[in-house]
Image 1 (cartoon, rainbow, N blue to C red):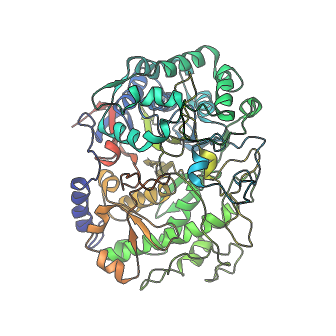
Image 2 (cartoon, one colour):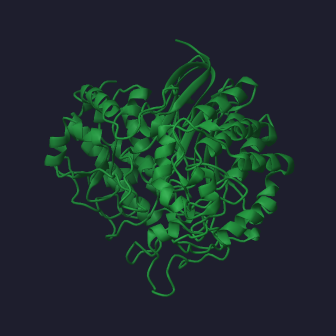
Image 3 (cartoon, rainbow, N blue to C red):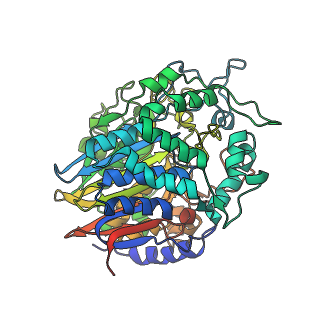
Length: 606
């Protein structure tokens, strides 16, 4: 259905968004939208998408292709992906018609504690940049274990077979584009502090030239060792020993000007690591069944709660100002509840059922004033309340989540689907490449709150031994009448949640096509006084109306690690699949953001 007054404005906004991109445009070899049959892949790079397509053509499942894509991203998109990180794997099983998930989030070493990010010399929390570029922020990586678990459950090929495309790309190298060079520039100063990192990503001490070839023989050999020995090579073996050495004694370069905090990881932490099979979150939104990731990610609950709140209103009958106003206010309320209630469910009693109930949604929806935006931070709702507009006591938003991740989607000829978000947290993670191994280590533990943020209430996201830090990753699969309709997700730290929410609203409520829904400019309200927006969002005709309601907007274009470093003000880099019947799929990614996406199908049609 079409929404009165919204779609024409969004169409205008699309044009602005495509012409006003603040960073280098899409790689000319990338195709952001593809339509066809037999399976599909959308990922960040041409090489990773091709790796997935090649596996699908050989008869692999969506799970096989996903492992090939993820491993290749570790080569071609190493600042947001790779063996040193973790993520969440959401899978639609066409045989059982069920959505299933794997939690491959990093864990805190056993030596970790609630005060691990508090400087004992001062009693104050470490500065965020200091915690990021260190061994202390490195969590026990779950990426490789996730690949193995996915293949055990749904794969046809071995891990060894699915690593072959990535090995080939690492050996021959890939062509550096403007996006990769720009991401390296943003990290140049801290990469130079670590010998192995500088050697790999700063050839001759300089930024890699656009058009040059970047090879990673160390990573190729690491993958070969895993192919021979299995995942135990990392989880307790020689690769793991090298990881632990780099965490405990960060390998700074001669002449380094920083003294990184050492990490707590031990080889026993790697041996003890396990993924977790979890039931997905589920809400029904206007007849669509929306499945997401349960805690330790906050994504599924927060997206789901936001949708439940929005379902109390008929967005299709609103003008543009009111539709956007309700979207922003719903996410503001859901983020307040996220901060109070959601953490690793092995350590926190997360009231998931209450947060996703219609009763709670009605309680929260009645707090949206159609005539005014909330004046800044709002309190969380009372999940044990009467169903009336009675929020709990005030809390302070907390968290340090980075905003650089990757998301990709895969489908196969049998109708299986993968929506997979994985990350090493900040762009470039900890900045530490494991010497001789060719991959960066994460800084995922900095996703914890360093000190309590919830006033007199317990903070659900403080560190603890073995605990998974709260994530915003929101890999999502949507069914309609029991059949696949959408698979979607995005990187972007806490903005992941709002990006996925906005795409779903764009597609389901506002009548956009999937490519339009992904390309449309974004706004992210996360229970703050200001709403983060992309520059193109400010071109909306509705901006004046939103401002009149009290909304304040801000563009974020500087690094969280160093405000002197300019970054792209883009929000998210989404990818999605839409299933249009009789095996046909629309594969859609970004036309411009972060250099654009690479979409492909096994059997394309015009």
